[in-house]
Length: 213
Length: 196
Image (cartoon, rainbow over all chains, first blue to last red; front, side, top):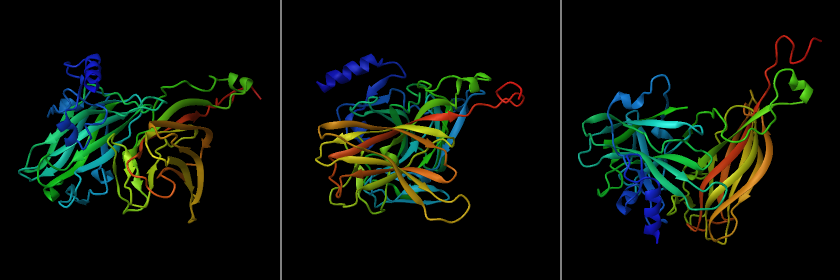
């Protein structure tokens, strides 16, 4: 039954178009620290992982503003995330048993998010860092399931030191503070690697969101 | 835990009558108001005590860990730095427990320019109702906030009365609705009236 409902929702939302919402696979959900068994209410924008490394991804002339977030604002997804940091960035220690750090994104209602850029440090040959913009919505003024959508995502694949990557955000990107909340979730490892966190060879330095009021 | 940008426009109904210019005194309009809201995700709450075990429910909501004892969490309410009237405190989450989740809006105030002990005031409180699964509960209030120069507004979440009941009780998000108070612009020449 859940799969039929999921299919209907996906069709309704226009699956197949670049900005469409598609259901997260169980593996995708697990890689984000989410529970895929939860009501089938987890989605991602179809092109959420398409990184576009161009300054044009961040500019709509005369309109775009930016909000810069420090990883020092992060809270672990559980008390089993042990952070450490230096001026070179924040990292998650090897002994952690949870890989995720969250920063809440506070933007005004009605704002349109247009880009996400991250800065970091990566000298780890096997682990990569992933930053995801996650929207969580509830029905307005009534009880109901949380509808989770991954709006944008960057996985940093370099391993030669400092890096910066950007992705444009072109769909499902209107901020709705009446019904939803927004989190930037960082995974400090590649899914499947032996440690939950990669230690100080994988550091997050800064996240910058581009938006239009 | 957060960086905030102040709301720039309202998406809900303007709650006060429109009053402009000389009509202001004649109609007795004290101010205009713009409706807006701020949502605080459960992931913004941090344990009051650093060693409190916590995790996420299957829905990604905040839960405390049974046996951890401590069940209190705090998050700052990022209100815009203007005068406003708080109208509603609302909470969403999951409740399959005989205990309830509670969120309290608290104000901490201190002297503006001198040392002082913080004065704590509980502004409003909401409990989860029922234990059948997802919940939504809200408290209606009308609380003027014109003291952010000396006060800070926080949200305190509590799971169960004394002890954490575990992942059968969770908080998804908290929303505070408010009206931004917009004081009328005083006409420099006629002071919003005709000659004195």
